[in-house]
Amino acid sequence: MGCKILYETNLPSLRSIEWRPLVIVSCAISLDGKLASSAEDTRLSSYEDKVEVHKLRSRVDAILVGINTILADDPHLTVSEKYFKSDRHPIRIVLDSKCRIPLNAQVITKRREVPTIVATTSLAPSEKIERLRGLGVDVFMTEGKERVDIKELLAYLKRKYGVNILMVEGGGFVIGEFFRQGLVDLVRISITPVLFGDDNAVDLIRGVSFGRVEDSPRLILYKLELCGHNIIAHFWVLRD
View (cartoon, helix red, strand yellow):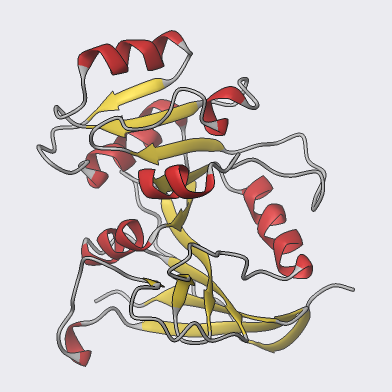
C-alpha cells in the first residue's frame, strides 16, 4: 500500500540559485513537534513513509546531518534496498565543527564508493583530519571559528560536486541554523500520531528563536499525504 494524496496544489516555480543547491528539510516528528524522545527514540516513520524517504534520497544529490545525529544513530545515509532499490546514492555530508565523528561511523565505512564530506572548523585536531582523509573522507575546512560556515559549504558543494538538490535530515540545531540563515527552500515533515510530552525531548528546531510571528519563516502548504499512520506535509518557503 502506497501513500494517499489528501491535498495538492501547484508548486510555484522556484527561483534558481546560482551559488548554492536547492535545500529540502526532511524529517519525522511527533504530534507535539519532537524529533526524538528524551530517551533518543526516533522511531517515528511508518514503513510507507520510509519508502517515500528513500525514494527521495535516490533523487537528491546529497544528504546532510549534524554530528549529533551521527553519534546518536550512526546512520548509513544511503538508499536502503529494504525500502527502495536504486543504484544511485547521495553524497553524505556531516557538520562537525570539532571532528568528533568516529572513524568507524557507517557513513565512513559503508558504501565507500559514495563520497563522504565532513565539514569542520579550525577547532578540529589536525591529526583527526589527516586520519579521516586517509580513509577517503573529504574534510572541508570552513572559515567559521566555532561553527561550520554553512553558506561557504553550500557554495563548495555546488562548485566541486555539482550538488543541485541537498536534503537536510537533522538534527534540530542543524535545521534551526538553516532556517535562521534563510537557506531552506522546501520542507517535508512526516507527522506521527504519538505524543512525547517531555521537556527534554528533541525539538524540531533548536538553537534559534524568531520571537514574533511576523519574524518567523513563512511556509505555504502545497501537498498533504497519508502514508501508513503518518501524515506527510509538504511546504515551500515563501521569500520576500
